[in-house]
Length: 310
Ligand code: UDP
Ligand code: MG
Image (cartoon, rainbow, N blue to C red; front, side, top):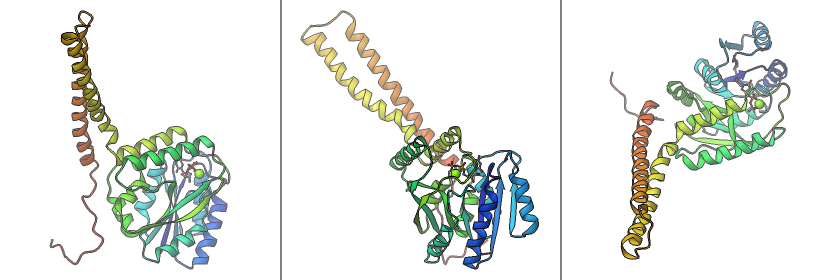
């Protein structure tokens, strides 16, 4: 099997037919063996019925039906788990990601890349709020993580079996696949495209789901929020120290003071600084704990000539 195409489905009954037609045209043109893995993520419409009917007529069509809605990232993960291909493509069902781009991405992989992702030049037909929040989110994420996660990129991509195997071993529950794939490494490149308008239906990504995805991305790839307390602590303590000197100066040198002010201000500042620093220290420990709790492999080997003895 050359290629598996993983398609997460949440209420996409109006898109499935045209999606599969366009995918089939692409695959015929590429002349490769291919399987289509539809992951029905608890759709409330007739999506699953449609997929089952397609599967009856075509053995290349596989399906996974979830017991309820688990979310896009988990749906894709399930598809990756059960995919048999040497390469796996991930594509949205709503035709915002043009299936024809798979041909270009596949050809790029033949040049020796393990990951080819699709970078969107512009996103048509999405609300300005969604575009704006997405833009801000990717920039913030970029500035606070050490992993190079490409900006303006979704999960539309082709990845090699090597990468799929590592992904399947990563045990974290809060999936942020585009980040995890960047973290895994190997040779990665991209092709550019214009993101289309959703063909039919409406987005399954509510703001609640988007915020959760954003928080998963940040907390899995950055300890910065945990360090905010230490940074504040040191800044506040620094300022507090200067104000303390000023308070003592006005109390004993210039003798221009209000009764009781010196001791009050000094104790407030002192305690505030100590508290923030202490929270920061706890944050430092928690950030290390969370790094270990993620249970990621320490390293990933591409190739070695050492045979490990059992
Ligand atoms: N999706 C899913 N589970 C969800 C939400 C979405 O499997 O809880 C699927 C959806 O069917 C589509 C893809 O994930 O194939 C992207 O979702 P959507 O188009 O709604 O997101 P948007 O493009 O608006 O960000
Ligand atoms: Mg969409």
